[in-house]
Length: 100
Length: 100
DNA sequence: TTAATCTACAACCAAATGGTTGTACGACTT
DNA sequence: AAGTCGTACAACCATTTGGTTGTAGATTAA
Image 1 (cartoon, rainbow over the protein chains, first blue to last red):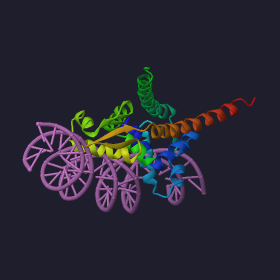
Image 2: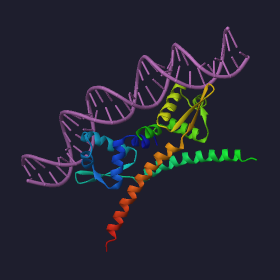
Image 3: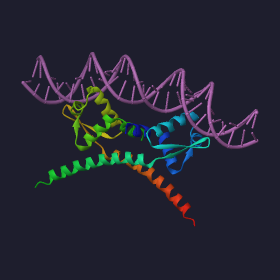
Image 4: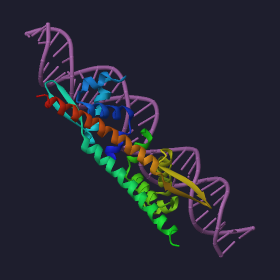
């Protein structure tokens, strides 16, 4: 989980994730979209891949990157649980206030 | 968003968030729960507060910390949008395959 | 075959992170 | 009034992060 959220904690990486969720792209295609070196984008992709948010698939000399909805869903589900915990607290408070 | 996800990218902080979503707690109450210095926990709370995931409210000499569901929801919504983007891709693929 | 393209990876650097200890100060307790 | 408790904050340290440049290997194109 640390790695997932850490990977999401960068604007460039979130943008790469967004793009690759919409459709696969090669590393160089991604690199062309940002004002930084190819190696920097390569590293960002590696972080996303390390978190499982993205998969890399060789295709000729290119590596096609595509977003992995499962991991996104996993992070989302955790946040959902936090909200549930909060809702449970509210329910307890409601019950307390309703003991008339 | 960077700050929100960065704040979530640490197990201790996510645990603090979980606790404070379930019910408010003072900084020292939180500190007692972890095997690290008071100052370290204080810093974690500060990071969560800086991200808006938690609010700090003076109460006597204590500072009560409570989780903020709005920010959790904000992060969750962003992840939801990624999934939508992905679903849209699948729909496009389906449409492509269905042109018979 | 030679040249161009795409990727991998190492080495380096400044800044941020996650932890520590120590000091100080306001707010309760006795 | 003195002591204790809860918090704030600074200074320091090791490690990680986000970026760079440079070199080298595969794969495709001329």
